[in-house]
Image 1 (spheres, rainbow, N blue to C red):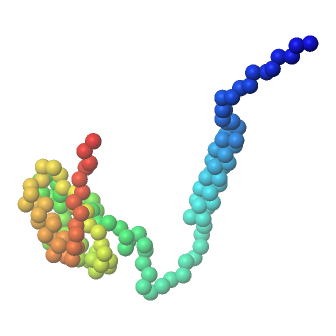
Image 2 (cartoon, rainbow, N blue to C red):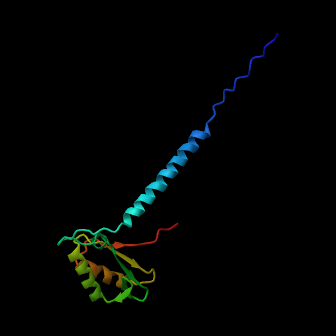
Length: 137
C-alpha cells in the first residue's frame, strides 16, 4: 500500500477570530465608560462653597475679538468701541492675569484697524495677543 505524504502548507495565516474578539471587547469597554461618564455629569449634588472659588470655565475662557472689514470690533456677539474693548480686556486680566486674547480680523480689514485692537489689548495688560488665521490647504 502506497501512502502519499500530505503537502504541507507553509504560508503563514492570520487568525481573525481573536482580533474580532478584541475589537468587540474594546467597543464594549468604551461604550460602558462613556455611559458612566455621562451619568456622573448628570448627578444632582450640592457642591461646597468657597470664597475664592469661581467657575473654571470663566477663568480659562479665551477672549475672542473679531474685526470686520468695516472696522467694527465684535466681542461676545456685540459691537464695541476701542475704549469698551480696553475696559473688557482690563476686567478679564484683573480676573485672570494669564488671560488669552485671540484677534480674528477680516482679510479686508485695514492694518490700522487691527493695530488699534492690538494696541487696546497691549494697553490692557495682554502681553501676547494671538492673531488667528485660516490655514491654507
